[in-house]
Image (cartoon, rainbow, N blue to C red; front, side, top):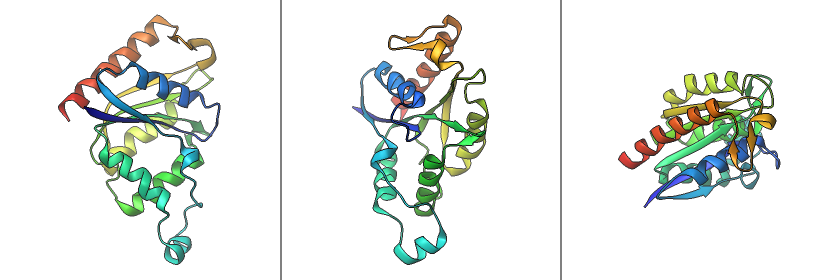
Length: 179
C-alpha cells in the first residue's frame, strides 16, 4: 500500500492549515496516511554555529526519513507576513543541511489556507518557486481563502473551491499511484 504523509507548515495547535491537510488526507483512497505535527519535532533555531558545535538534531533526521519513505506528501503552508511560518522554515533549513534535495522527488499536494481573501497565495507562490530546486515534485496546488467562511468539519463549502480542491486531489492521487 502506498504511504502518504500529511502535515501543516505551522505549529499552532488550532492551525487552519493542519485542518486542511488532515481533511485532504482523509479524502485519499487506498493509501496509508501518517499525519505529522511539527510540534513533535522540536528544533533549535538553525545556525551554522549550532550545527558546527552540536551537529544536526535527530528531529530533522527523523522528519526527513518520513519524507524519504513516503510515496506522497500533503503539505498545507501557513503564511506569516507573506512567507513560511518560522517553525516550517526552520525545519526546512535543518533538513536541507542533510539533503539538498530533501523532498526526494516525492509527489506533493501543496496547499495553503488563510482567514483572508488571498488564501495564502504568497507563501504558495514562494514554495512553488523554491521546492523544485530542492527535489520537490509539486503535482497539484490548492489555495483556500476565507477559511472560516469556506470550510467546515464536512469540508469545503464553496462549490467552485470544492471542485478545484477535488481536481488537485485527483492529480495528486494519480501521481502517488505511479510512484
